Length: 74
Image 1 (cartoon, one colour):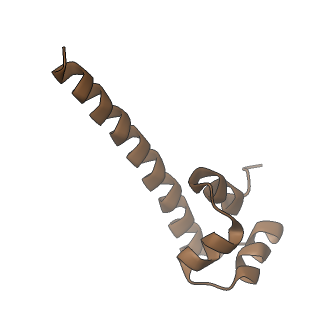
Image 2 (image 1 turned 30 degrees about the vertical axis):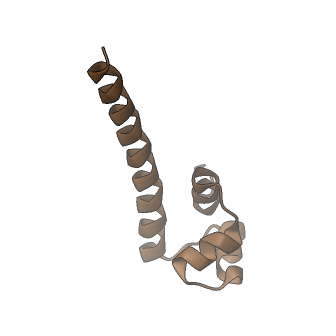
């Protein structure tokens, strides 16, 4: 079974469920329910997956930029 999507987002962004709720503009209890029950509305599931993808792409871009700077300094 896939790891809890709420937990994945919180770990990836290093935030709490309360902070995630604020980012998504939903009540804290709603995020807690998603996490414990694993039933996330389709639209919100898409948004959470996009948050993960966005974070991963930003990390890759940062690595590429650092490599580019390294090459420019050779």
